Image 1 (cartoon, rainbow, N blue to C red):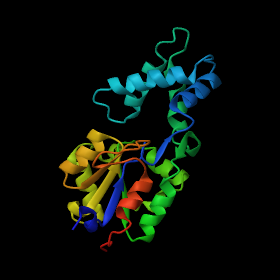
Image 2: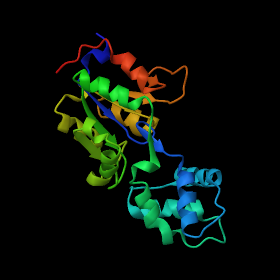
Image 3: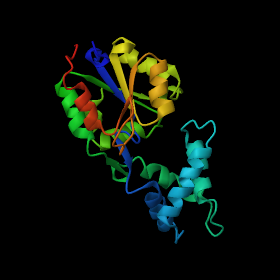
Image 4: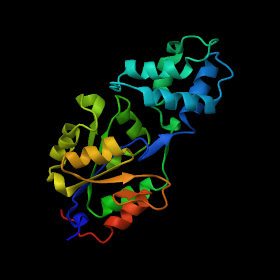
Length: 230
């Protein structure tokens, strides 16, 4: 019996798995900065600085203070800019709005298929107090009766406890739950250590390695012949 013959529920990461910033983090940062009198910010430059700040993060706890530090580092190289904290609140709230995000094209058809197949769904996400509002605004909340959000419980992936919380709320044994996410360390390895099955989503990968999928459409292919256990 293949492992996917035992799947009763699927948990998903959110950022990079279900949705992405739109048109990009840099575009949103530049738009808000311009509205606050900081002109000439190039989205591509801001994207590079944001990515660098994200890689440097240490003990990031998804609090407003942690996000403020990322914003400060992203704008910090501009000697002529005001303190980005002046418009940090506006930036923070912008990313709680659906217009700052895009649902990946393969998401809705995959979630709908899973629901029709009787699979119970949940999200397990490193996020903050904006996520529930965002999920509602994007009309994704209807798919997820269980939402485990790190900022609400004070536990972040890859800690096994966050996955154990999801398993407990789903009410199924850990080895009958599949987790899908785009981070090798936070999603794939974290879920495996907690006893869940796991697939790494490597978007755009045309020849995915074992344990990887290149799109959520491949998830449908992986599970389509599965006898769903209810």
